[in-house]
Image (cartoon, rainbow, N blue to C red; front, side, top):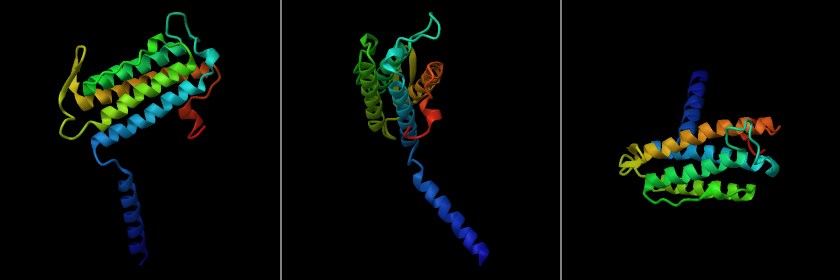
Length: 172
């Protein structure tokens, strides 16, 4: 009797876990983008306005320039994936509010890119500059780029005494 109960409990746990799994690789990549997007936006919102000009060393981007780079790159990469480029021109923006808005706008273009990607068109060839890959490959490239840039953001935040979103925990 105990063995049957343990087996049923394990089976129920496995079924519940599988119910939370994305239905496809596309859905899984989109889900990852959602997490990355939220961390990037939360990082941008966490840095005080007066520290957007902060540069850890004179030869690298300021925090604000880093936010602009991510927003412009997302718009460019995700627009190339779908063939519907919509620049956000974040490099010309200076205030925290403008840059957070640009990040949200470019993230929306990536979400639209994932929404428009299907099993049928995920492997369609696309290009961005010299890069030639699949539609889904380019969207996943954006995920990797955002993660890399978030790593830099975390250092900037720590240098200013701000706890990065991934260390602060959910909802903080």
